[in-house]
Length: 322
Image (cartoon, rainbow, N blue to C red; front, side, top):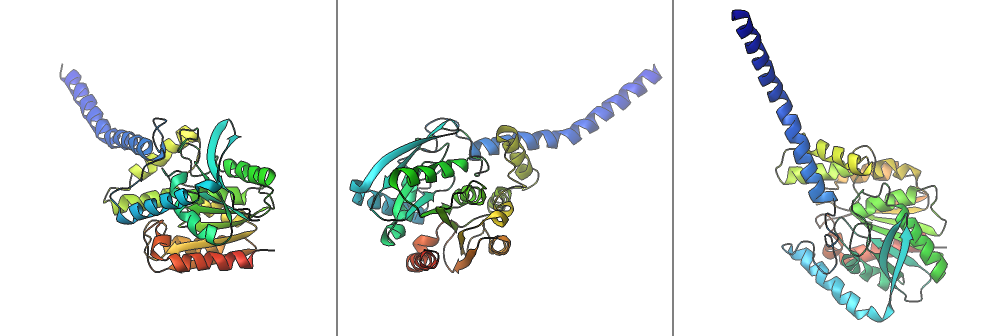
């Protein structure tokens, strides 16, 4: 009897110890899955839809949203709704045809649709561009469920570029990407299938990897980084096969040709100046430039520095045009 009690005690203690070890791991993966679904999965077709400001509590975001809608209304007569198929996904956009020889494709950030991009179209119209704004895969009217930071969905930008080139005869196309939209652009611009007419990439607040910017968001919100950042990235790989920790712009900039303009705010705590310098140094583009702005949180450079923002892009276009 004493031997049996000893064995049962040992088993109980072992199970208790095992439970204490396993519990935080299980909790970590459960919380990571919740974070992944909350941030990178469109759970319903109406999620990440048009006709809404993504952050109505942010004063600058509301100003950008309203200014963008005003631009869209003022230029609606130039707008042609467009759509393409890419890898089985039906994707939607709007082409603003100002009868120019250059076109910019504006690629917004996570949860944003083409209406958000109207605001970034303002300086490009002034600089003599046609403008294509798009609902990225899994956003707005476009098909899709997952945000993969461009690791697979970047092929959509190659299809959009091909569409603009063939349908509208445009031979000079620029990609302008904001935050995670810039990550998508980086994969497209580094692709071996990038056509010659895809000439420039303007990167606004480009992060090195999604993991790093996600980690910085967690720190800013005073949430624990470990293990939840790691388990969130784990679920991304499970659902989409995208490696958001060890792939991203850091691993793409060294494959780039053409011309790349990096735009950063000194106040950006998510895509930091340290990341900016790293990406610039690693970038292999024939023409590259890194410009810092004094004011503006992440993705809010333009609203805080409109004249310098426009002038920086103008000079870059001028220097990289035939």
